[in-house]
Image (tube, rainbow, N blue to C red; front, side):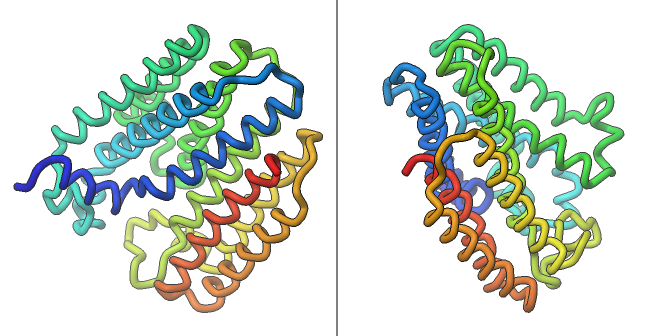
Amino acid sequence: MSSFAHRFWQYQKERFPLGILLVTTSAVLLSTAAVLQGLGYPEIPWWKYAALGVAGLSFMLHTRIIDELRDKEVDDLHHPERPLQRGLITVQELNRLGYANGGIFISIHVALDPLSGVLSAGLLLYSIIARYEVGPLAWLKPRFWLYNLVMLFQMVLLQWIAYAALTQSVDWPNAIWSHGWGILALSAQLEVARKCLTPEEETSYRDSYSSRIGPKGSAVLVFLLTLAALFAFDSTGLPLNRGLLAAALGMLLAGLFLYGKNPIRRHSQLLQLSAVMAYVLCQMALWF
């Protein structure tokens, strides 16, 4: 087998697209800085935002690996083309990588602020419990909508932990809480868009949104989640760049229309790209 670095590079291209995640994470950090500056918080050194970016990417890779390991038996049957299933990477390698990234996540938060370190440890523990689906999570697993909502909730917790690291407090004005809910809505928008598939890609396991409510229904859901995010951002009371918001909605609507009308592979990819662009532009609307 080729080197682990080479195999991991291929793995991330398929299951953890680092280039896109760098863009989306940077957008979140900029909108976070915009909210703190708009609320009059003291200027925060740029390296703290960079450190939180590394921590966020580490946590997202950790949870990506958790998902891979938790769903292995299902994916063995329904997605044999995935990297773990075809032997590109092993369970042992993913385990080591997942725990290493969890350690990076906690270490950065502990270094930035003890409170955020404690909160990050709690979030990491939750993600590990989710892997083994113990207690209520076992009950949740067959309940597609509720299960995915609970899993996505980790993203708003991640955002609020970042705020704890930056402000060294959890006593925040409403604008910070609203910004976190907006991040959750945009994260859900990306997740739904990612699982807007073509009929040929659907499986009997029905693990996509398009398999549950059809191409048109899932396209509408992506749009509604984007509107929810904009409502949350508007609730911060901070100025929003209307031009960027109009561009975000325009591109998103074009992608949604093409996919909803004719859900072929090219249109599915365009929808996902337009969702990423909307995600970034909505965040930038707080900065510019």
